[in-house]
Image 1 (cartoon, rainbow, N blue to C red):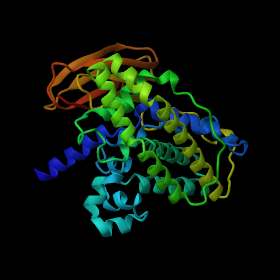
Image 2: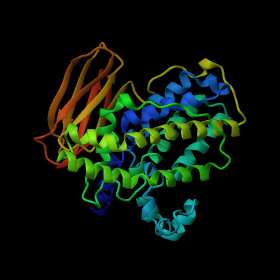
Image 3: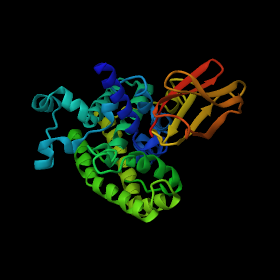
Image 4: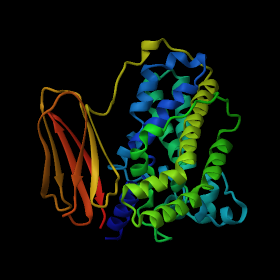
Length: 371
């Protein structure tokens, strides 16, 4: 029973800590390529398209891999030495020795996951494994993006310690989705990083400074609107956080570009012909499915892609007991991207399964419903 509770806790935490959401991660990854120098022009468009289209693949893995979630955050202010000195040891082994393995995993390992993914990207460049290099670059972009989301680097990640439950998805998913058209920013000149580990920890420390600003903005917006669900709330929230949120995304893109460029230079600056990587949208399957916010508090937006418009498409919702709850789609649809809203007002708290089927392909997404 304790083991089951622990695994559920990891899953639930992973659902909350979903980064900037599908849209935000795509924006960070797609804009990174704009900073590439002409020496990296051979990576466009196929290689860079994979990096963008796989930007949320790391989030999808959390549905099946309970070890994935800790790679997306670090509760940096849960470390006593951070509260005293503003920094922690950059050595994973040292932190485990000081605090124990359970403490370190529970508090998240995003800086070391980012560093390990960077090392894997460099190794792929060295052996000219271009497809895998794109996939590792996509994961790198996801972890870098999460490292630029302040609520991924604090113990109070969901406002649970300040009576602001739900702030995580309100800020990173709902607010971002409402203001997607405003998430435009210039690219920066790419830089070679002399010390990658220092670079990663430095942006985590800097981005942590925005935690209080987000929490204070949430309280102010709630005071103005009288709730945390209305258009008035989200407009007030954007007015107070929009400027630095755009800057967080911009610096996330620039950091990803710097890291990709550095990995390439460290690998000896190899070059491949433009079609060495075939154009693709998704390697793991022919369907794409995600939703936001997740967890949801009454309704959630489901987005999905259909690549074979000749077969029937079904989207089914199953409750925690495995009983079919809703049939959202049951028809042949043209190839393309679709969006719908699942209204869960009459459902109980729990983990629901959203199942997308098209021909012989099936994709499942876990949705956490909170009451």
